[in-house]
Image (tube, rainbow, N blue to C red):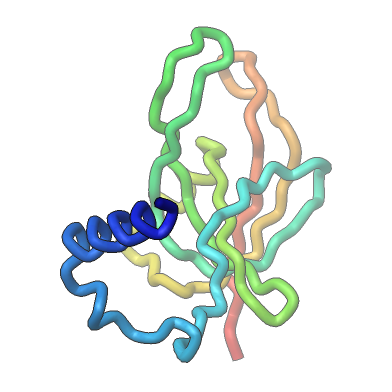
Length: 140
């Protein structure tokens, strides 16, 4: 009976995905060097730096802790060199995202930056927000 169930599952898969028999052998394919499961970068102390390549803008669905409501958080995504590979990192700090949005017309995917976390700074409304230094890296 187990073989019958497996056979039915295989037939269902072929029916749902008609090109199944013409797919390439994945064991012979190359894997891209970029890890696409992004890590959210939350700096822990002032002076923390990252040297990264700009990738794009996106959004994350997040839950507001105070209300429990879901909302979209604008984020900026970067590619960071890591142990011979590359990983995707993201950040949703309004000031950092805003800085990159201001440069959006001239930004190029792959442009290099050094981003330094400057700590929490008091805003004009009396609240505290993350503060950043963003510098372009001159590639040689």
